[in-house]
Image 1 (spheres, rainbow, N blue to C red):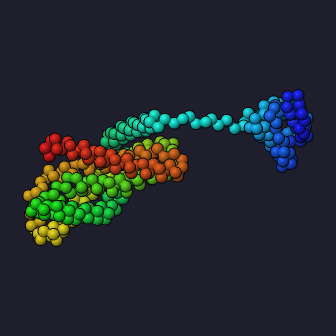
Image 2: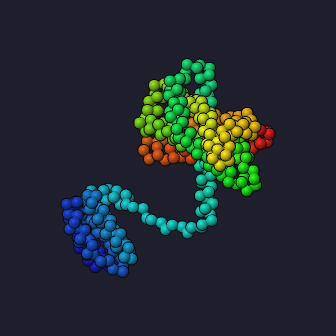
Image 3: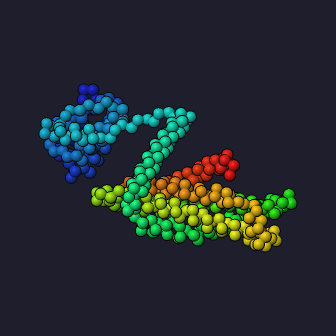
Length: 369
C-alpha cells in the first residue's frame, strides 16, 4: 500500500494480497499512514486478493483516518472482491451512542414501576399455579389412586420427622428467651408471675407456628425448589410430560399434601418445647416448680389459644410448598437459575407466611379469639 497526494487531500492505494498471512506487515504499514486535515481517498481498485482479516484491517485504517478528522472516501475493490468487503463492512461494530442524561427521580420512578410490574406478573402466575393445584387435587379426590402415597409418606419423613431436632431446639431456646425477658421486664411492676401467661400465649398463638414455618420454609421450601429445578435442568420434567404423566400430580401434589400434614405436627412439637423452655426458666428465675407452672399455665391459656396457632399450620404449609414447587418449575436450563430461584422461593415463602400471619392475627382479634 502507498499514500499519494490527491486533488483534495491524500489518496491511499491498497494493492496486492490483503490476507491473513500478511496481516502483521500490512498492519504495521497501515499504522504508519498519517491522515492530513483534508479528505482521504481509499483506493481499493488495485487489490488482487482479500479475505476477512484483510478487509477488517482496511476498515480499521479507515476508522483511524476518520477519527483523525479526515473525510474518508472510497474507490471500490474489483467486482470479485466487492461482496466480501461489503459483508465485512456491514458486520462492523455499531456506533456507541452517548448515554442520555439521567434524571434521578424519573429513573427511580421507572425502576419502581418496572419492579411493580414484575411482582404483579409473578403474583398472577402464582395464583394461576394455585388454581392448577386445586384442579389437580379435585382429580385426586375423584380418583384417589392417582395420588402416590409412597411419595407422600417419604416427604412427610423428610419435612417433618427429620426437622424435629432443629425445630425443637429453636422453640426451646425461644421459650427460654421469652421467659427471661418477660420476667426481667415484669419484675419492675412486681408482676413476675404473669411471665407464665406471656410465655404460654406467645408460644401457642404466634411464636410456635411462626418460627416453625420460617424454619420449614428455609429447609423444605428450598429443597422443593432445588429438587424440581434440578429435574428441569436435566429435562426430567419434560420426560414426565412426554410419557403422559402430569408433573402437578407426580411432583407438586405429594409435596404439598405431605407438608400440610407435617407442619401441624411440627407446630405441636414446637409448642411443647417452647413451653418446656419457658418452664425451665421460670423454675430458675421465679422459683416456681413445674407443677405450679403447669397449673398456672392451665388457667392462663385455653383450648382456643392452642387452636389459633395450630389452625394456621396447614395454610402456611400450603403456601411454603406452593411457592417452592412453583419456583422449581420456573427454573431454566442452568445451574445459576437453580440457585437464584431457590433463594427467591425461601424469601417469598417467608414473606407470604408473615403476611398471612398478620392477616390471621387481625381476623382472630376481630372475631374475639
